[in-house]
Image 1 (cartoon, rainbow, N blue to C red):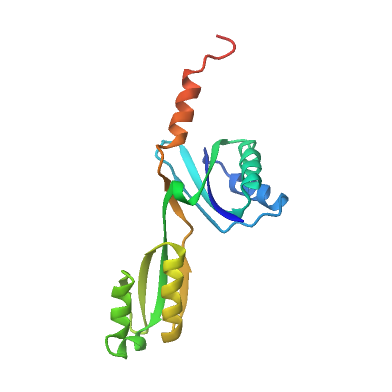
Image 2 (cartoon, one colour; image 1 turned 180 degrees about the vertical axis):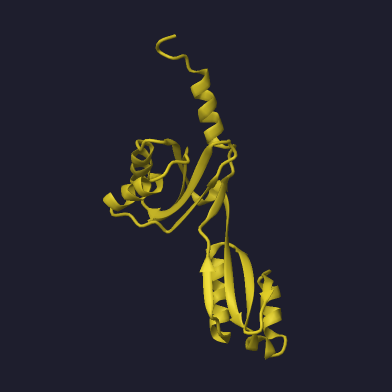
Length: 178
């Protein structure tokens, strides 16, 4: 199985996420990561979904997603076609910082940063790929950690945005009644 990132462009309608997720459920496919946000086009939202599956299954999945009402277009990408990041937050006991400068060096070596210092804990932020955030998590687990959370993938495709090209092609296609 390979990892693919799926971008779904849609109107921002209530219940759409449920319908998209149900396409995965019916096909018994697992979603590794899911994020939603506005896109660069006003009124259009973007779902970024990560799956580990065979390409033929992903191709069929994208075709099924596109059949959903309110979905404008869906695309899938191989890892080398995208630039992506995730963000992770770690809640580490303040006492861990009393171990000399070990924790501070660890934070610097992972290019992480401290977001909040409280009497009982310190919140550390790390952006990167999931392998990067997992590696720092393992380090903090050895020291002590209260809480960990990671966002879903945020991705931009390396080729120029296909949605704009697709929408432009629709505008240039004469309607049957014209």
